[in-house]
Image 1 (cartoon, rainbow, N blue to C red):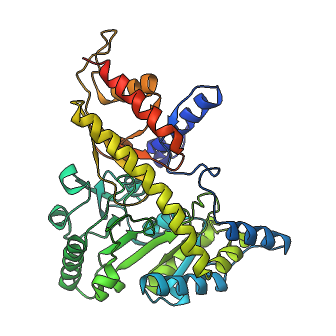
Image 2 (image 1 turned 90 degrees about the vertical axis):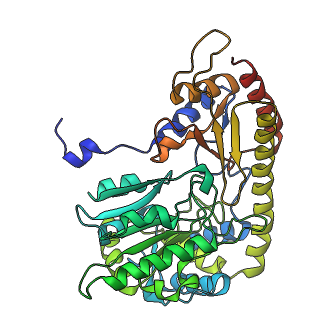
Image 3 (image 1 turned 180 degrees about the horizontal axis):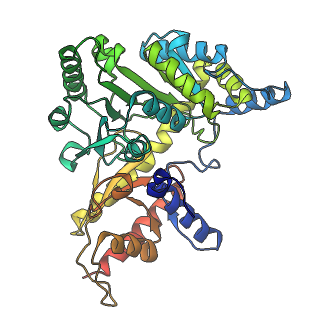
Length: 418
């Protein structure tokens, strides 16, 4: 059947495809440690009780009609107050756009800024940038990030692509790596963006930064989150933030996100979204507006929630490093933020006890799944090279009691190779 060239060439989400396949196997009774999808087991990580109650009350009050295209006014005001209190970022109502999570906001931003052939700079691995560039027929300017830099792009990486570029995509804390941009590196990137924009004619399209900070509340230990506008106030004219409640409150299915940035860009994003109908539900908007003002409740929730996530990330990290110390070809990067651990399974070329050669990374992934019953996402699903031996491990569905047997099973699986 003939469809559009875009539809013919579009690749669906590799992460969702893998996650769905694992879920089906679990439904059939197979024991699998499912660390694939960037979601939560709501029995392990429920949304805040207050937020849940506010949602119920909003439906009871019959908030079931269309919301405004840019989001209800009380939510935009609540978001503005939340940003001012938590990040000291001051934005007006008309500089904030509400939508049903981060995805439609990112798509609307791409549609607002990127013309066919425009250069879009992004590092890999990273979440979905490659697909959004494809959807808007932009020019891929891809940076292969390395373990030495915690898989985050540097100013030196970006510099060769910056002349004439339209959009630079940054995500920190990053999905899939769980790592962050340091203050120094982000300052260097901002200075380069400002220099590039100052060099362009007044009537030329500027270089904008999409700053995805969906995980900014989830940093651990001494790690701090930095943003372009605080570090370089002049970046306010060129930075569009992507944010929301999905990860901050384990509320992926509640679908309330927001973008904020220069009013002219936000207004065009509103126009795009008005045609998509990608608004957050009215009741959820009412509930989130009420919840964002509950400072003490939010602080308490984040304290317990982050402690539970950090325990899982660090326990698995230490387990992987212990296996490395025993001589197994595995590694991990110390977790800094988000719900992800970057792990390496460098097993290509090894043979199973049955003599089967693990000839490529797909074979390694399948071996770990079939023998250790561990499902993790290879970095090539995030745009990295198909031969990359690195993976994303998500702890949103991880039960504490599963960690020890999971690591034991992994060791047995590794020991069987030669």
